[in-house]
Length: 143
Image (cartoon, rainbow, N blue to C red; front, side, top):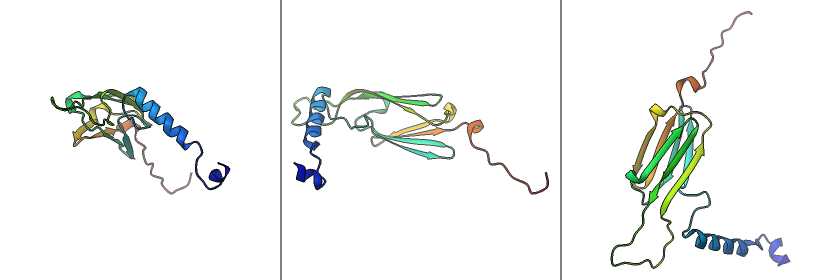
């Protein structure tokens, strides 16, 4: 075991893998470490765009709440086999989910846009005009 640690392998890897399997059994489904849904957040001068992977979630089963500098994604993913089918293996979770994100600015709730297409949510959150950084023009001259 000492030799393995010297060559870069992790002696606790198997214990962590076992813990992950136990967690999956207790939770009833395989959940990504960051939670469900998995997201990416992109910032630009006007605001933030959040993309979330939501396979199996219908737009009518999705709730999005924006309050000041907080966004909450919630909903339900239903995954049921056809009438004459049973699961052979099930790794995708189902049921209700909620995920909340803090943002570095307050959101202009009048300019929020959300689209769900092919299992990907694109949420565009705009910064209020009063909160956007303003460039100050400097003039040359004497004080």
